Length: 241
Image (cartoon, rainbow, N blue to C red; front, side, top):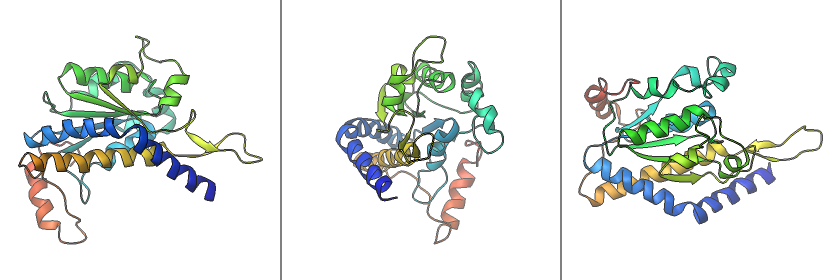
């Protein structure tokens, strides 16, 4: 436990040292988008979908943040199927068509390995639509394994900005006697940290442009009436509300 706590802190430190400028760049895109009433979309498969859910309908979160979710590439209904579905070409095109994206909106694609077809195609399609596309991935793992996309490209090759979660190849860190492989993964917690850093800086950037982004307030404090107004405003636009 102590070792893993130290690893987590060290990993956050490497993000601060190596990824800060790229995080700031994406936050700049998003601040500009929010200032003109634009939107953030976040997509991930498997455990990476947690980063997409992190931005959605939560206390302190943006009203203009939309997760791109489909049970076939999540883990709560059929985890085994999801592992293979994220490797299939064509899935991304069907999913992206369900979201009313506009040029200049921001798309963040999250994939620890950066090698599977669906995240790669999502980034490619986002760029075709004129979105600003960033990736959150594990650079060490991406570098170590070949692409599963027909083009031979990886997510790191097709996103405009690539932010590494600074994890190891294989995601888990700790070797323990008697365990067949490492335990203790950091990709989810670092992905959540990175997306929250983008959000808070983007809000500051939008405020500097004279726009206060719409946001949710905790429904367990004073947020019910405030949130209800937002939900009525956007329920026809955001398919997950």
